[in-house]
Image (cartoon, rainbow, N blue to C red; front, side):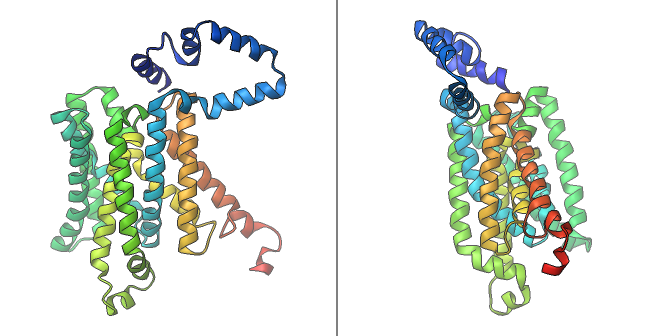
Length: 338
């Protein structure tokens, strides 16, 4: 990512080379004076400079990284709470199925309109909703299990999407749609992410109590007229919309990672739903920042980098979390304090 990102930034900002060294060359004598000053700095000063270069310099120098960070922050506020409710409803794999199911719609929009954000978003939204609603309709019509219908639809959708992109695009186009790129987060994509996050938070403000009630006592929810079916469909629609908004930064295959991994990890840090949601949002924010920095410094796609950062936090939560963590279960005398 780094070489392509620097070339794009150089084209936009007039840098005369690659990365920070090229930026210093363009700045003329001041760069030399700063370099001489850096040479005179002590070890503590060099450590501060290195920390700045590692954590802040990429976002300070390049606007596309700032846009990607803002977009990921927006999605980190809206996607993990949805993942918590999917986990409570034992539907964790449903989000993955929908993410794969979006690909043919995105691919068809790419074939027709190229990398147009509105077209890609509309295509992904239509395909995701079709897979989500089609699986339920097929299971009711044929008497089969809904998970079997979802599996058949998402595998077919994934194969069709890859075939469409390979037919009219290049390997780079396919990698962009599957794994995402911070270069794809332009102003339109950023507005889409912000709008989706705002709409999702408003929806959750109204749906919080019905969804919690439906998760823990669906019979009582039905008896008091909580309209569980309506809120269930609203939840699935919000999941699809968040996945569509996320694919620009993390790709269609990785979009579900920012939604589900923080939610699954957060259950090891709190026993209340509010605490789990707060922990999931915090982990998603941390994974977004760490993943974007790793993507920049290690020259890897942003989607896998963000999801791997979230996976590391999940592994740490499983091992060290105070709620059902392995360390708490296996430490001596744990059975006496349970």
